[in-house]
Length: 258
Length: 287
Ligand SMILES: Nc1ncnc2c1ncn2[C@@H]1O[C@H](COP(=O)(O)OP(=O)(O)OP(=O)(O)O)[C@@H](O)[C@H]1O
Ligand SMILES: [Mg+2]
Image 1 (cartoon, chains in turn red, purple):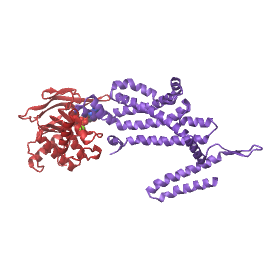
Image 2 (spheres, each protein chain N blue to C red):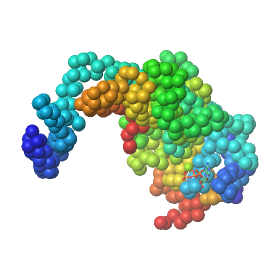
Image 3 (cartoon, rainbow over the protein chains, first blue to last red):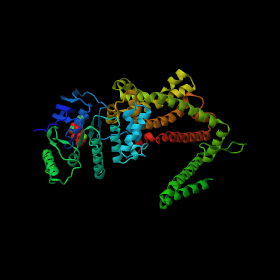
Image 4 (cartoon, rainbow over the protein chains, first blue to last red):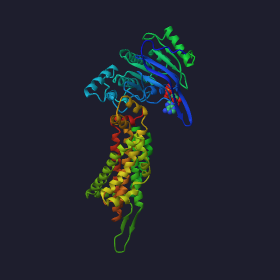
């Protein structure tokens, strides 16, 4: 199994021999087994795998929310021990706060800035995600796609170096999902962020990623890493695209013709 | 009289049955009104059946009404209104409930937040809250009167106990049931202790806190009447025992009961308005 290396760009995230178990009653469940992974600075990586294979667990470890049983995670050469605003994790559910308005949600990471500065930053990102006029709305009054855009704006507002996203588009309908993918790419291309995005949608990973990390189901291991050297926007009918798709399905252990 | 009441009851019953054919909107008006009329008529008939006459030789026959009719109750209500007792006693009861309840909220909410957040705090606080909670606040009446005398403070203390436990336990469980992702996000964005409390823990728990306040105020209003029947010489609860003890005035008793019910509805209506605050509405609507 030869993982394509990150090339000439410096490795931002280095994961070595990462394992994680959960105790369930008297049983022990091995969820992640000896994961090795490198993510380059400015790279867009998708983590693809079946449900329950440990994708969220991996992100929680990368974000510094949980402790590994073995192995190390280094970011910029420093061991990850706790959450840090330089790397933000967008959780699978509950991404934004239902009790706070769009404005308050986006300002979450800006509490210690001056009121004026905070207002300017919020206004900037509200415009970026196209939610002008909804600043004082509550999440309960927004559509799924709008909520997801607020979650993205809240992250961008603190200018993190790395963003970990746990199935950010999973709950959206397919049209909104396409639009949101385009928006994510646009935002990623204008900044110099490193993104690791979890998904179980093969097309999503091929549309977004520089490299796709495929995981096996329990215990989660890395089945393979596929580089997607295609220019954006990517044409899903191109033969190179379809060859990669077959490769991904193959790594996932499913037949592509169903 | 009897015949009128009987006919009224029958008409109300017919209206209830016949309303089936009406539109929903009309039913929403007709059904409660007709049921109310039916209940009043039945009450009247029942009250009349408890009436008896005393015939003493050389004196006119006296009619004794044990249980008051609705009409008599209305007269009693007017009496209470005009001699000022109704207002005075209602204010006395409401004052005690307000002070005891607000005190319970002021101490119970912070304590509940703390015990819900910190495992150490919950180890020390929770066993004692759980042990004291099943004791009826009324069981404290002897101790309350011993400590405070037959005074407002005794009733306030009992109201405090009655509302404190629902508020602490409600707040505590609200914090505990908060999804971890909220707290993790807050840590991730660099929020510190107080910011975390003000921007995440408290607002996340607020809908459930409001529900516990609603329960607590309901309990407080139940308990104040009983407390005033035993531990104090004024208030609506006192009015009830006093009316019975001073001349078997059951008309006053029933009038006071109805006032207690009405005020209870009013109090519940007031707390429910809290559910409409913008930042808590998410907790009361299902998506
Ligand atoms: N806190 C926990 N305690 C015990 N077991 C856990 C815990 N968190 C996760 N697990 C178990 O670890 C496994 C992996 O969970 P994880 O949430 O990482 O999967 P996932 O790949 O994100 O799945 P999905 O695509 O459905 O979100 C599951 O079998 C789950 O039951
Ligand atoms: Mg998951």
